[in-house]
Length: 349
Ligand code: PEP
Ligand code: MN
Image 1 (cartoon, rainbow, N blue to C red):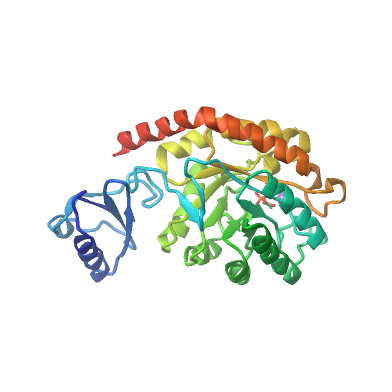
Image 2 (cartoon, rainbow, N blue to C red; image 1 turned 30 degrees about the horizontal axis):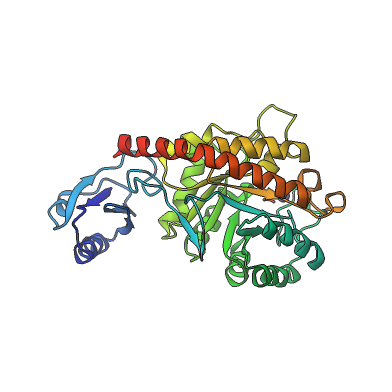
């Protein structure tokens, strides 16, 4: 159920509706929009008696939700969510660039890459400290020393730092040392991890599972939001198909499909989808043209010696050039992307 408040509703009226929802053992998720607040209601397994809420003051409308998701939808918030990370953001007018090495390998490597990230004007540095590797015998991440390096990058370069959490204890470390929790493709349906991230104060970057449908992807985001964390960024990183010429097939069609349903920002990962250096540029440019709010790109100062994902890493110079190109594309295509969102919001509202 979704309770849409009148645009004139006062904070006091919104609080009273939230209390009424709590008092029947349900959970209220008030999301303030540009013109009105809507309150998503979760916690019910059956149909909720809606009449008791309709008569509360300040309520414009009570809508029964028939779709599987309640909180990620444009019905709840008809304009795009801007996820704010301090003074940086994802989903606003500026294209968000998140870049860095697949794994933090040493202080010297992290600093060399962070210099390029800073030079490009990006606001986010991503480096893996705990790596989910297919083989148990390959490099699993630096662990303890990696957290110190991330903190140093954050302080020295003023970049927001993003890293992947694999389990509850690594969520705690990310909370202690970093700014954004990444949940990787392999964990997209790790429901206890999603719930834990949902109880965090940090924004969550959620990657699409390799075999996940759009509905499963959005429901994974719903898990995080249902716990009260509304700062979720979706990431299309490619899915498994019969194609063997790429590491994963980048599903660009998912971008307009998400825009039609959800207010959440969505970024593209051209590195894990392409899998090879020469593919990253074309896929990044296509992703931005198709409406991505940002990119997550792997960069290494010496790709040939990388301990993970070296084949897909851009060199610092290649990366800086790519950022210039995608910014130019974004400037040209952002008005069309925004217009599409507005049309969808009107259709769903
Ligand atoms: C990564 O970002 O380095 C990573 C492992 O990505 P994914 O979860 O998309 O495979
Ligand atoms: Mn990687």
